[in-house]
Length: 346
Image (cartoon, rainbow, N blue to C red; front, side, top):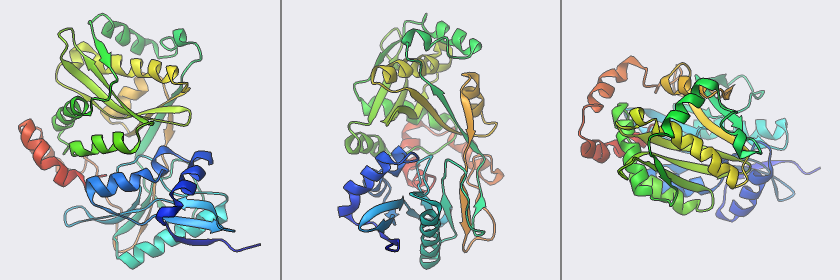
């Protein structure tokens, strides 16, 4: 039997790589090669994607991206700005070979650490240690659209019914500008630097069949909530979502996610992936209120130059002043400055 070899990704691998991801049970939207374009063009980070081959056929892949910042450190991550990543492979031996290659690449680049954002638990060598304080949430979308509401937890159903009385309307015509503006205001209010508007446009351009915006408007036709979602395989993943100060009273975010379930059903999707949230955070508690299934994430890290695990969490006390200050910034200022910081916070 020919030995498995691991090498760097080449542009001509893209079609076979994406086909491998499409057909692998653990292949996620974030493993697709389109993210090379997104991350390189929007954030300027260097990809170091790895491919395992046997008989000239791909038998494993590992997307990796290098990030380097004086403030936030130097890392090799699979994959920044993505909730899932890590190796997908035909078997554990191939996976271990790719993980070792990632570690070796980290040593060669002189990074502080290598991070693999595995969704499922995997057996690894001793250089890797668990590093995740997040969980993801998901629910099955019923075959009968009339049962979508009843599949949601009772208290959350009441909130959705409340939202339906507020004369809200929706549009999914991919207005990335409206979607971005609402998202930018939402994250500013949380004290988080926002990404560039170019990210939203690039995602829609690179993944035209798999990405879509949904904008919710109030009775006066003013946008109040929005989300940029990804459709892949049998699921929908609402990814960049938020609302303005009117959203809470109107329950427009609740209306939005409920509407998204119906849109996904119409597209033939049967799974709603609510994405990751930090344990015990406000977003984590909000998702639990929907009654969705919780799944701990299994990120892992190999320290190279660093002597301790990184902590880029908003709960880190050293970021408290920055967060409190950011919440007070005028929105145009936060939009102008945010992308220069957030490019290292993926």
